[in-house]
Amino acid sequence: MDLDEFARTSAPERDGDEFRKENNRLLGVPLDGTVTVKAGSMVAYTGDVTFTGKASAEGGVTGFLKEAVSSEGTPVMEAEGSGYLYVAEQSKKVRILDLDAGESISVSGNDVLAFESSVDYEINTIGSISEAAAGGLTNVYLTGPGQVAVSTHGDPVVLEPPVFTDPDATVAWSSDLSPSVSINKTFEFGQTSGESVQMEFTGTEGFVVVQPHEE
Picture 1: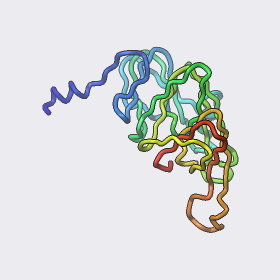
Picture 2: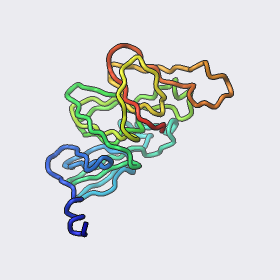
Picture 3: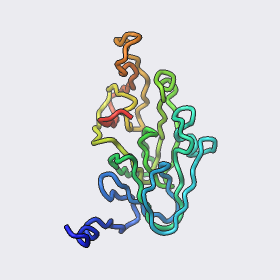
Picture 4: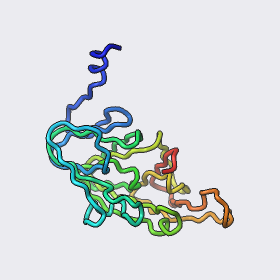
């Protein structure tokens, strides 16, 4: 195609006031106020937008990925202003979730890309995983109303409990589930399988989202 056609067919559509996928790996955020996005995820913006990093020593969003767990000093940032923001992370695929009022989901801290200011959040560290595996696991408990964007390596799959998952491949789970750590004792000490620490989801309701990739 020629340059004019390329520019015309590749131009984003910016109608509306909701999150939108510009393509499978790029999130578009219409901004009139504030939104929380993963630090370093901005690839472009139009209008008047300022970015403020949230260090883990502060409150609120600050515990998002604690330094003690992830070594990330500024894991998220607040974008404020009026314009249009484009965010992405390592060419991961983007999924947009619409949470109703009071509806909640837990998402791995590695996979939260953005969420609206109307979304309440609580940061949790699954301590037993942190103790059992290098790097630990931090999850973000998000409650609507509002939109949440998550990023995944490849196309995720949704599983029903009871199920065991690799912590590094686990993206999200429904709010009615509370995972525990399972140590697979069939792997003898000294082996390097990398599969001895697992997340165990019990019960008969809810869902677990996993991706075909280990962070």
